[in-house]
Image (cartoon, rainbow, N blue to C red; front, side, top):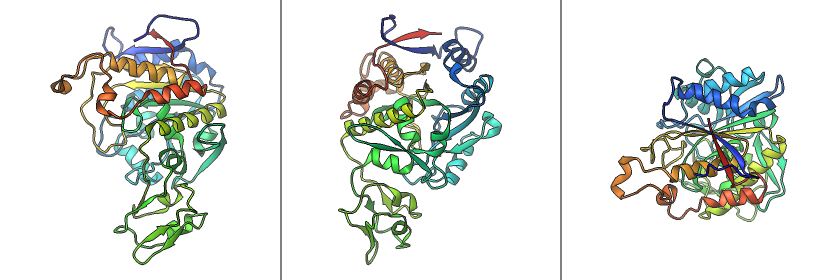
Length: 374
């Protein structure tokens, strides 16, 4: 991992997970926040969104509540008004609407009592509460962001760094891009195709037809069907279906999805005037993301926590550190050694560099970084 300071390198602060003092990792996180000075940009009384992932039911690798509680405490010390937030999921499991999402958060330990701040699902009850931000990207001219994120004054994007089947890894870029997008925004990032209908689940209730503003859905004999030339791929019907009969059809081109994520980060960053701080937790680094309803064994030992104002730099530093670390012994049966690309070995066809290269090209950050170890 790069450590030498240089001219135009972005700064990434780092604390490792090894206990080398009488202070806990939680207290050292607070110390790193103070040393970085990044929260000094919070103006008195600003609403600060702690953008995070509450975990899916059945998984256990998500960030632990004491860390989040400490971040909340620091926001209050810097005179901000914190709230925890995430947006509803595109897939129809237990975070697809605000009611299930809040229940899942509570089951996994995230409540006002445990973290000291309220939880607001950013895109509302059914994922349709969003605002539009104009962008000048290759894939998008506008993006769709959960209203609570849009109206927040400051964002602290707290990511659990893991593997991801479409991005290779999921870090700060993925957390902000996918995690702040409404269901419509998630759909447009994931898919460019007409949704898929599971005819065995369709009840012909008509809710999807009512939700469609393009007259692209019709009732058939046994299920609804799509008129492809009218469908815009907005994903509103997925949020409207109560029976999980409609799902997106995912593209195979990972590069395009990664570039779309970058354009979402670009739009949010511009709208916030760059009042965003990124934190990557390199703890319980599983091959799959926290959206999974189970957690596999971590691929490397716990490494620590990184902090930066640059999403490209912090993700590059994180992946470099993971790849420079020997595999968890539980994965050693495959003769996987230190220095190999861990995420390439898990997702062989995915080039995770795409999001970093495009992110630097679009000006959201810098792949060249320097580490300041706290």
